[in-house]
Image 1 (cartoon, rainbow, N blue to C red):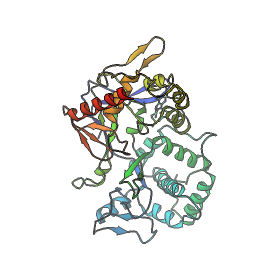
Image 2: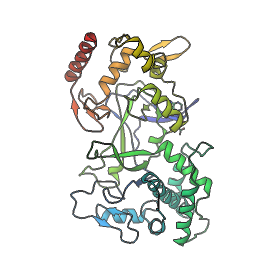
Image 3: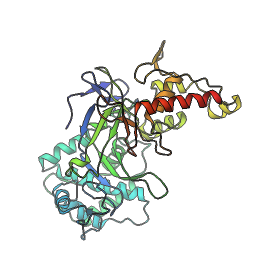
Image 4: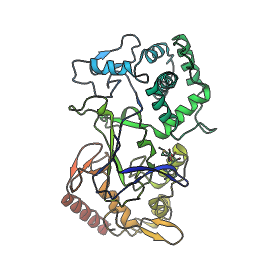
Length: 394
Ligand SMILES: C[S@@+](CC[C@H](N)C(=O)[O-])C[C@H]1O[C@@H](n2cnc3c(N)ncnc32)[C@H](O)[C@@H]1O
């Protein structure tokens, strides 16, 4: 499903990444990717096979053997049964033997993910297609280290369930070792895409499940990204598993050779929190142009003592057009540029924090990749003007 635009490169200090093979236009799809496998979070609200919302469907099918799977249709049930890392007989038997007692929702989801990853690994010993998918998963960044979460309890529960499910031990096939469980969890942590669900009753963010994509997993992070993910798992006119594809669109025009970058968390996140999450969750220090600039800003406490408005912010140019190259420091985004970028690309709806993505190449309409709201260029310019007036009044 990849386009001809994104090519894999090695980047010193970042591992692998994707770059533009040619000039790219704002709104162009630079990558479409289907998952290696997906694991659901909770049972019953979304299809186990394709994560489509089940509400309002009258052809859903529940698995009575394990009680851990529901499908939006008989077709999805068959799809999942035929997929070794979906809801194959081996996965179903293992799930039915799992001891979920006392586990948090997060640990139950991690255990389901492990059952499916292990099933793919075991199938790779005798199934060509599974071998390719397992190789793609095994090649992703992320190996357990001493800082990884303790996974011994999940390993014990997984191996107990695996053995009591009496999985057929086909030639060369064996279950995970403890270090392989820890590695699989590290890969999920670094590469897993949380597939979002509709917000909960209090507006809280919820996820349907985790999907692992072979090529999308190679897109590195920057805090002023140049691509953003769009997906539509509920698309009525798209047949499973194609509804589980993610598509990355360019936020603005990009020259050939530019690295594609996405933001691993909502763009409005503060500098200290971004630094902490990059370090603790992903194991790197972000030195992107925005972090370089914001590292020189006073902390919130210092800003309070200086008084609001002491940070002079001027309107920058069109995002994508102006980054200062400070001598010896590499690229750096100035405060005005950051302000305009965030105003342009962070969803204006209260508490959404999605990314405004050009609807299609050549269009000046932007659509939020979370809530779907739209904004024209004229409305953006009006919002920009209002932000400057508010600032001048402060
Ligand atoms: C989802 S993977 C991205 C692909 C990865 N570079 C690879 O080689 O597979 C996430 C990992 O990439 C690296 N990474 C991503 N963005 C980075 C950045 N801005 N600076 C340094 N390392 C980065 C970190 O090691 C992070 O844990």
